[in-house]
Length: 445
Ligand SMILES: *[C@@H]1O[C@H](CO)[C@@H](O)[C@H](O)[C@H]1NC(C)=O
Ligand SMILES: *[C@@H]1O[C@H](CO)[C@@H](O)[C@H](O)[C@H]1NC(C)=O
Ligand SMILES: *[C@@H]1O[C@H](CO)[C@@H](O)[C@H](O)[C@H]1NC(C)=O
Ligand SMILES: *[C@@H]1O[C@H](CO)[C@@H](O)[C@H](O)[C@H]1NC(C)=O
Image (cartoon, rainbow, N blue to C red):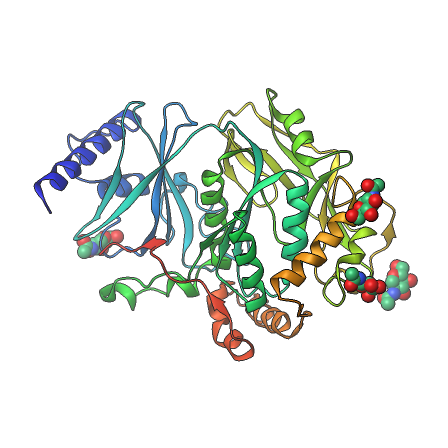
């Protein structure tokens, strides 16, 4: 460590001393490191033996006053749940996640307004880890940023074309896609939109192994974390949004207002109001012909299938504090509220045609303007991406994933639904494109 780094480290340590006095006012005189700070807030020692991995960036969130340092981790349950595991309890109450050994945590600490953190060094006993710092501000650039939860073993490439084109037409300006794995066709489509500057592709790789001397005492992280830790990905994405509006939606979900364009509608409903999020009711949609076996012509006349499903939402990115999948968890200003949207979540689930739901008439459409020009554009885009040889969809890979997931889903003996467990089976049926490990998650060494 150079002298300069040492000073920086002392500086950061001192800042943390300041936080802890500022917020917790504990009855001791001096804290060496944030490692000790974590231990104090956790209610138990977090030391070199504790199984934990850190997201590589810490966030200083200036939307809060005073600003807050937010550190994302995956670790085993802690005694003190004050620091927000996935659904507020640990182990999670959600049955498919209940036996996972690793749960997302978010440690938050109030900062003094004028501190300018450059990096955060966390000492865990004999080990340490260094996180870079990103800053989060209120948003002024008009637009919608769409966050995708980790895309794993994805094969319905047609969905992505319809999704990107429909969301763009509704006012989306940026897509943040966390990519774990997909077919070659999926990857080609993502690359195409990445090269157009629309998608920011971020790898969401398998999780790293714990340090060698403790690895055999704990389950592998990759084998015991719920669904690629979508909760972590979603909330990290929310902090990376730079536009006024944001949303978290899967590749088969588009939110539309009854009239006009989503961005205009959402801006009108949320700007300078106490509405922080608009909730859209689920509407299953089927196409004839199907987009997987034909072209996109079926998008012109969607059929709506009546069946209730949970909402999805679009939010004011300056005010959301923490996201859940189907509604906001909390806002920065606690007087903000949700509002039911005048519109629909169009959910074109892969298997909806096979389900015997009653069809009903609805006024909703994917595009706010001329459908035929968008449909033509989608056909042309597919032809361009695949150089004229547009592949149809093979259900084999999807069926393999479904079978593997069904096997993991607990019946009597509860099992953590971790996608890492499916890799061997998935590798047998296809040559997957996988995310490269690029230091997204860090282990203290
Ligand atoms: C870490 O803390 C645990 C208690 O959770 C303790 O049993 C163990 O000895 C500590 N390990 C080290 C290396 O300090
Ligand atoms: C799209 O598919 C439909 C039905 O299979 C067909 O009638 C139509 O000609 C196709 N359009 C194009 C542009 O390929
Ligand atoms: C579909 O649902 C209708 C009405 O609920 C029922 O009469 C019909 O038998 C069902 N068809 C199949 C194939 O399950
Ligand atoms: C919609 O677009 C199609 C194809 O680009 C065009 O032929 C048609 O005239 C347009 N319709 C309207 C109402 O603008």
